[in-house]
Length: 88
Image (cartoon, rainbow, N blue to C red; front, top):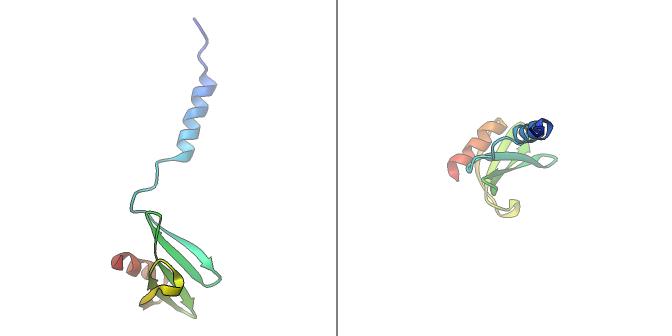
């Protein structure tokens, strides 16, 4: 009877658990784009930007910041992101 490489099997299971499932196709990501702005992507595609102006979060829809069109002004980041999701 040959020895079972339990360590190798255990290592593979740990590696698979660390990676986890792939992100959903419609996953939304919010990443800092500058000192006072964020880029919002959905399934890897830019859907818009959120710029922070004082206490106001300005949501702009578009794939590049210089051509994005303002669609909402709200008081927090989650609400601005939701407006972009709804408009996409």
